[in-house]
Amino acid sequence: MHELAITESVLDIAARHGRQANAQRVTDIHLVIGQLSSIVDDSVQFYWDIVSRDTICEGATLHFERIPAQFLCLDCHHTYEFQQELSACPNCDSIRVKVTAGEEFQLQSIEIEENDAAPADP
Amino acid sequence: MTSTVTVVEHIMSANDRLAAQNRAELETSRVLGVNVLASPGAGKTSVILRTIEVLQESLQLGVIEGDTAAVTIDTDKIMSAGMPAVQINTGGQCHLDAVMMGNALPQMPLADIDLLIVENVGNLICPASFTLGTHFNIVIASVPEGDDKPYKYPNIYRSIDALILNKTDLLPYIDFNTEYFRRGIEILNPDVHFFPMSCKTGEGVPEWADWLRERVAIFQKNA
Image 1 (tube, one colour):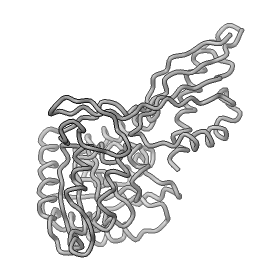
Image 2 (cartoon, chains in turn yellow, brown):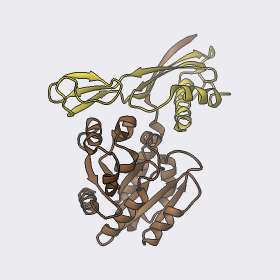
Image 3 (spheres, each protein chain N blue to C red):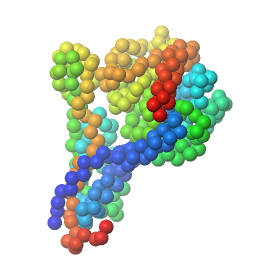
């Protein structure tokens, strides 16, 4: 259920940046989500259609770029990705590892249709 | 005309900003905040009551209780133990967020307390995404939940400082591989402090309480 709160945050950020850029409409929203960040794309999409209604983001397409979780072994410096399950370093079996990617949770960019008129006074 | 606008903003930034305000409010009153995360039935309230028992001699505690339903069972228990408690009903929502925390803080006598324990809603998924402004997070796991939880819910173990494994008195009766469990946690979070505990027998409670007391002392020294 936290996807609803997350979807509302996405809308707030996208609408704010859209207004600042004098957008008539936001058409696309690009999200970058690491594998260790727990959200369900389908749920966000479902809520999106409801929460974006009657806003400048209505009908915008959500694009999810998923970043695989990546680990760096602190003992042998081997880099590996999160496969099926959390695992120790496949090279030396050490569990002294550092997460180097996979925690991203960002709104990266939006695509907009601009107003033809001059920007309104802020 | 169409164009691309670069945003690069953390999706939870609005919540994080409010959390920072909550943190500032705690620090003004020199209160250390702890966010307690666990699945339902892991023993959050029992651990808090045990903690109060041991620490009430030396510290003044306060507790914020997050519940999805409008029940005051846990809050009543804390108040009977003689500590101030504030209940937050999330109205069915699966986690506390910085707004709810911010609304609860004015009801807490912050000037009189040293340590604020926030009992989050019982859930291993959603609360991990919402910072509250507390200084650190802990997870209470319990033996009957099974030793595979770090592998199934990795996200919540990433940002914690301490992990309590509660109900260790049940280890003789349940197939729970403590090594496998710990290994999963350590891959995600190698620096976590691990406290095996039984609220029933009291095993492990003093070690946990000592660690917490030390954290409060370090915090208040630097505050």
